[in-house]
Image (cartoon, rainbow, N blue to C red; front, side):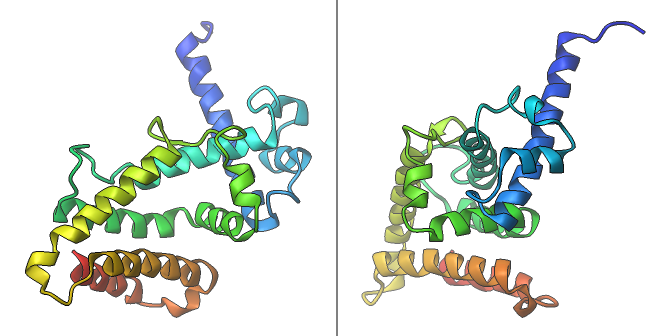
Length: 210
């Protein structure tokens, strides 16, 4: 058998990192970040605790890797051509992508919501000094600010055709709060979304805000 190439070693390393991250995500989501130990993660990943540190230097480093990966997957379709303008087609694509990932990435969304609901934890864990989070290489704070600006401009662009009663700031807040509220109920009380109700929710949201 010929020796493995550097590319093969790198592929194996990435597979092992993914295995660890998936095991950690499950534990962080179900048990909580602070209650989950490196030993517990290693046991669920089927590796030794010592091997864990060959891939991640700390639990915080591991969480940062999970968040970087997941935020890039979730927000990678927002304004895909990076032209500083959000079109109706791009807006619809983003909504469909987010809802699709609600289904595919339930563990991540549960983890993120639980982190955000813990007073002080979100700010401490995601501070740029402790845990540099990015979306496709752009720092999360910068990406979030650009995202909010594009959404604000998108809703403002609809004002002329929507009439004098239309308030773009209120509409944007209603849109973002609807997404958050849906996430909470879907992730923690999904019995309310049986049958085709999930798909109907997506279409209603697109029809209302596109």
